[in-house]
Length: 209
Picture 1 (cartoon, rainbow, N blue to C red):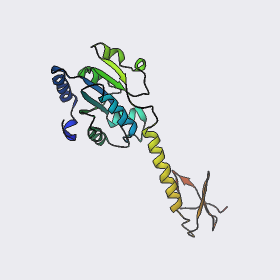
Picture 2 (cartoon, one colour):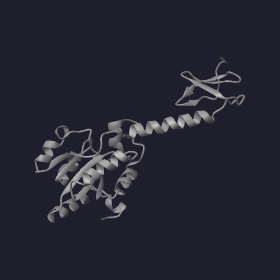
Picture 3 (cartoon, rainbow, N blue to C red):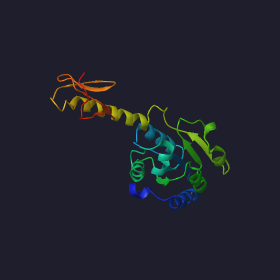
């Protein structure tokens, strides 16, 4: 098996490797996704995909395509690092980056025996199902229920950061403890109030309560 860095290859190189594998009777599966903040749901999906074929190819969305799909602020991890992390998993054989809105270009070039999607799909709802069937391939669903997500992970991290930050902050005027409510923070000692933006109070106080 290639080393982690050797697993990450451009599409044409992976296509040649897939053709070579097929020529000696091995099957190829394709999985795809952003894999931003890799979590246990990703691992279970990829391990399930690997169980369906001899060779597992993973197509990872580029930063641009993640932004288009999920909005500004995503991905949290750059594409090269996301690809390297996926490649480090023992269940992956090859990893490539793709920039399109969907994975059809990769499918057409690789022509995998199995196109594997996560449990947010059913076999009937996989968009590329008919295309894969055209060369005799099939779609399959792998992984656990969608109980994990990068969005939820990121929100939990930010919430924990905010909680910790609130326990550390004090009134910059008198060093008194701050009380927090929907409108911001106020000092329990001098009663000055501080508007809050993004979980962080402005250090320029407003009027006392």
